[in-house]
Length: 108
Image (cartoon, rainbow, N blue to C red; front, side):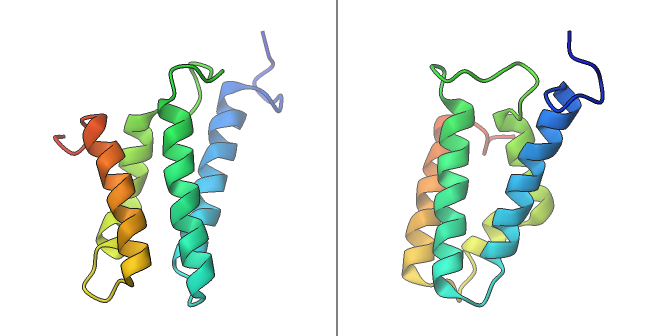
C-alpha cells in the first residue's frame, strides 16, 4: 500500500487531478480565444477519460460526481453558456452538457 505522502497516494492523485482542472479553468477565463477553446477541449477530454469504463482509473481518482461538483463550484457551465459566449465555445459546452446528461449528472 502506498504511503499517504507518496506521489501515487489517493490524496496526491486526487490533488493532481484538481490541479489539472484548475489550470484548465484559468485558461477558460483567459482573454485569449484559443486558450478558451483549448480549455473546453480539455474539460471534454477529461470528462470522457473519467467516465470511460475501459480506462485504467483507480477507485480514488476523480469521479464524474466530483467533476460535476467542481463544475458547479467554479460556475463553469454558467460561464460557458452566457449570452456573450462565442459560437465555438458554445459548441464545445454543448458537448460537455451532452456527456453530463448521458451520465445523468444534470438531474442532481
